[in-house]
Image 1 (cartoon, rainbow, N blue to C red):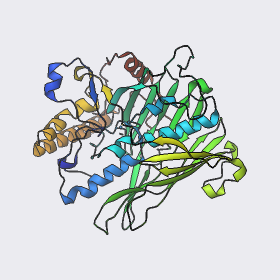
Image 2 (cartoon, rainbow, N blue to C red; image 1 turned 120 degrees about the vertical axis):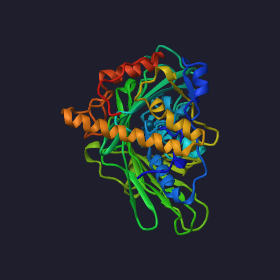
Image 3 (spheres, rainbow, N blue to C red; image 1 turned 90 degrees about the vertical axis):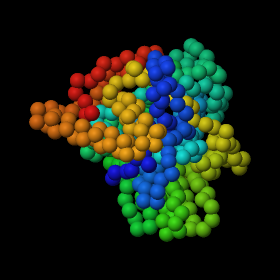
Image 4 (cartoon, one colour; image 1 turned 45 degrees about the vertical axis):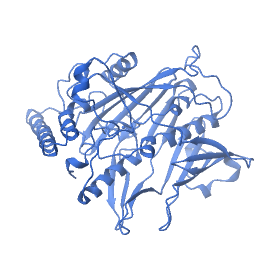
Length: 444
């Protein structure tokens, strides 16, 4: 599906505009900082509304992330929106407290869509990648208990101090379009990873968007908690309101969070909206103990009361509460109203590679910012034609393209592995060293 330049966001990550040529020229060595809620958009005509909203729907499922991955550029995670809740996931000494902290992260990862208006991302190119840092203040308290704010080693206090979170994502496959992403916070011993792929289907009066076959969710690992791993699956989203002439995005599906090591599972049910009245964006959930070797419960009503640890209720765009077992007093899990996405810190322009999203799409972005939509279309078509030519040349030479930062384009278990270059890139981000060599074989 193609799109007119009027519906193209200023950056492939769709989270924030690329730095202007003027600011880059003034200080090309300075890392750029971008606010995820800032977008480049222009009033789209009616013919582009459907395409624009389809792209928005793809983002609702994410992070990954990619910011979508390449969420996000689509190179940002289902993951490209970070709040201070992200680094407190492993703080609690209580297994239930850690699962509730994962839930708190889950409801904050899409803050940029709650707070801002997303626009259509560019179509990701094979081998295109995006990287950035976040400086996150470690200020969110554990959900349960009073565990101290310390590093993964337990040697350094992190309370109310800035902790660096690094992110890299790469378009690993073009047919089907899939990107891999990795988020790393060594100080807190937290990493998140996965593949981003989405599919859309017309259902008569709406469009249903679901995770693709290679998108098995977001995986979170807590190194200092005996490598506890959490899997967070994505719900389906829907573009509705076509008959009423008022398009809207809704989430009406069930998704799951599981941790085999702690044997705790969450079922979240996003309620379907009625035909009349204002959207409520309601979500219900249950946290319970389960058997990883016999994981058969998929509905809230199927969970025996004896296994329930807590219940979840609220509005996923407002406030979420949890109620512990044997208690009737709801407690605040997260209030989204005062929270805002943390700005991304991006490598300086002169240290970005030719396959890096901001640099790769810079000409198109500048044309859009200057409202030169004809020029933007021309440059976009030239980039896409160049990709086709390179694909043909690789085929004639018998060269197989391989991702640079991830070991394989796709993994059956939904978990990407970093290559040596991938580990080096993340280490460089942590150290503020953005230098990378150009790849010999690229998809660009």
